[in-house]
Image 1 (cartoon, rainbow, N blue to C red):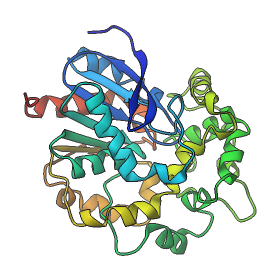
Image 2 (image 1 turned 180 degrees about the horizontal axis):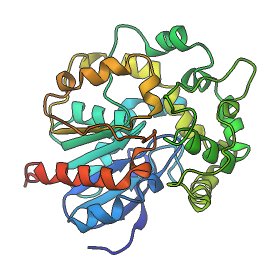
Image 3 (image 1 turned 180 degrees about the vertical axis):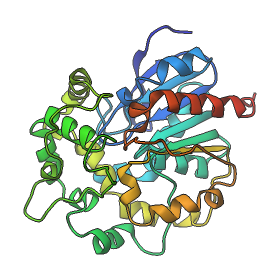
Image 4 (image 1 turned 90 degrees about the vertical axis):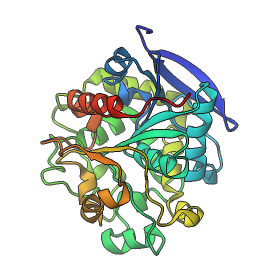
Length: 330
């Protein structure tokens, strides 16, 4: 087993991805969300690798040290799931357990749905799988939450990009603290909606102090990891949101298909995602969507940043889940 996290780059589907890796054994891929990178899994590398797993956390396409394709259309769910399959192959493996948080969760769920021959187990934190609905998602979100809902606000290229890149450290501090279980925004959880005439971060004020799980050193790491893209530091991640309706179009052939591999779902009691339209119904339907589901009880007081806020509970649940999976196919 390697004793420290090692960093390298791999070419996957024509995109250069940065990966962080530790340990030897069956492959476990950890997929981050927005606005994060490999570092969001810093508390998982040691325990999972010590238990005999090869743990790899990529910066997904467009994020941090990974390459950022210029074309918005290059960030569709087909590209993102293709990167996961390509990465597994590039690492010399035939199968992997795929774990995702925030945007990484839909990528993990969809990869398991598309390629159950490659994904031998899937875990999602915060965001449950959302079956394809009858209409494009953005129209429904506009109707329910208005133009100020952050996913709608993100749609105009260049706007949120510039606001976040103006002072990345402040952006990370406000977003990470604002979504924490310690935040007024999460007691009870409420959707991130920008008031008319305001800017993106006006809805997430500067915290008086950081939550106990987050330090200024952590903020500095995130800021440094994103520095290579300059004024486009957040553009790659924002482009994922700009493909939401396109993903609905591209995945029509998979409508109604369940996720049949062994699955685990975990979420915080105070996660902002709970305030999204329809999430309550999605949580009630998890066992129909994933018939081979293991659901961990919600994490009391935990906000959106699940594996960073509650690393011990997340690690314990992941290790139990991994231990129950069938052996790796030879």
